[in-house]
Image 1 (cartoon, rainbow, N blue to C red):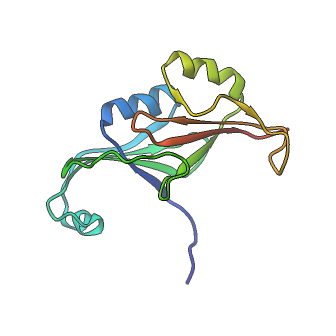
Image 2: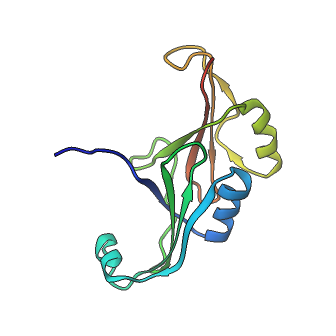
Image 3: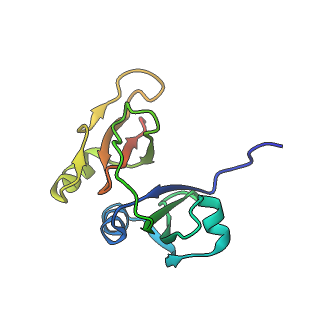
Length: 149
């Protein structure tokens, strides 16, 4: 027995509408499936909340078969976490972009919160590339990565 692939990455979010505007309108993700009130017993069993009501959206990540699942817990509501990169349990997902230097001012204009601006990768296996860290509307860390030539 072994892992044979990856289906999706999931994030819990504060406000689905604001989060969808970020991922779909700003980053170009596409909605695959939207369920405003998931209450099935199997789902509640998986997540460990017997009375959960969850707004669930599955997004297609551009250029890949991997999916992004967004969950807004209507009940019980969650508590925002401290998602600083150094905190245990904090994570990020890296999305490949084709022109980070052109994309950066557009994201700035849209009001995106950045941890760093574009950084030239001048050593290591990704030498010649560019990367930055930013946050989505929920504080979730996203890396934008432009591979070197």
